[in-house]
Amino acid sequence: METVIILVFVFGYLAITLEHSIKIDKLIPALVMMAISWALISLGIDSFTQWFDSSAHGLVDGFENLGHESKMHLMEETLLHHLGKTAEILVFLLGAMTIVEIIDYFDGFSTIKSFIRTKKKSKILWIFCILAFILSAIIDNLTATIVLISILQKIVKDRNVRIWYAGLIIIAANAGGAWSPIGDVTTTMLWIGNKVSVGHLFVYLFIPSLLCMLVPAFIASFMPAFKGDLEIEDSDNGKPKSRFSSTMLYLGLGAIVFVPVFKVITHLPPYVGMMLSLGVVAIFAEIYSNSKFAISGVGATEHADHAHHSPVHHSLSKIELPSILFFLGILLAVAALESLGILFGFATSLQETMPMMHTEMEGTRVSDLVVLLLGVGSAVIDNVPLVAASLGMFSEPMDDQLWHFIAYSAGTGGSMLIIGSAAGVVAMGMEKIDFFWYLKKISWLALIGFLAGAAAFIFTRTLF
Image 1 (cartoon, one colour):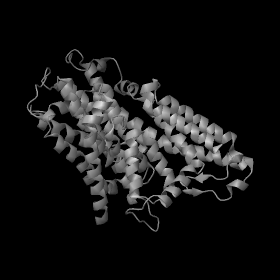
Image 2 (cartoon, rainbow, N blue to C red):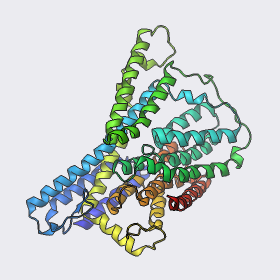
Image 3 (spheres, helix red, strand yellow):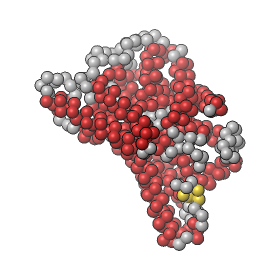
Image 4 (cartoon, rainbow, N blue to C red):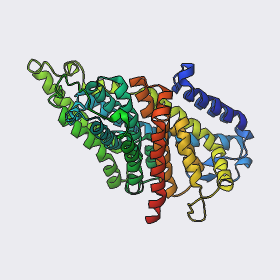
């Protein structure tokens, strides 16, 4: 039965990676393989010889000798445990996405456009890379990529020029998301799973992540594509459409940044702080929207939706629900493999057979090469299940260097292929970037940045 479940996962995962070829959205195979995997576990519960307890990070003693009812009860408790952990991530993401959509509702991101005052291609490259690095740490790498490419489309006419900028934005956004607990889904998973803390994440990963962005940007600034000046399209003179745009931008970003602070102070799960932040932002959004409605005859040029929708309802309708359902499916599918002890056994065999390069923690040695391969693997397949698998594979304590290296590798490794990260996929869709163009022009830059950051991590961790 275990073999059948593994095959279900493999075929489901293959369908996810080939979604563009088979024209089926990746959320569908993710949900199907999740449901089938747990159904097979339920039907064959008596045939399994071991069971992995996620809360205790170890195999259940005497599982094989338990009765049918006891095994079913344990399975139900395990599924509920994984659903709760998954729900924490999904509710957190829902809150963050809603705040970002509220900011966009008031055209808050148009404020960023006014920062660009130069026409020199290399300077604009650095502006967008730095903005991507900073914004992705605050509003996540996917959203930062969407925002910056949207701005790029408004100021750069030539698509052949824009796709070069888009390629470097992907690298910078993924690098920026790696050192922030709210910058990347995989880092958020590790943070919510109590594997990394905010302080240690910054200390260990800021410099490697910064180098991962700086090195490719520095090399690219000398390339022909970024020589000379741009013809800037500035039809609206960079003025925001809403008089509340700047206020909502700073309020929304501040509310998201407040979430880690709230967790440190209260020790409550991050989604609680995110719901508080969403509530505060929503209050101001409703007040400003009502204010606009009351004087609608005065500001006719402002956002047309203000007079017709609640900003919160409008923002909730714009959320990427398919992404939320995909995370639900993939995380619970990986949880099925974890519960059967498959990932635990795989991790044990890895640690016994792979060459051990550097890390040695409390007698348990974990190969740096395994983590680097995880980073390369995240460029080929989605990094969410890879990190979800690592959560079940390794039992190192919170803030162990292993978890920080995994956060870096999974977060930045996806830049090496355009399909390797959510930021890359969305940029591919927005600018119709060809897979092989990215492979030829951008991938080698991403690889150099990834290796530079990894080398920096391996060196700097010896200092702490």
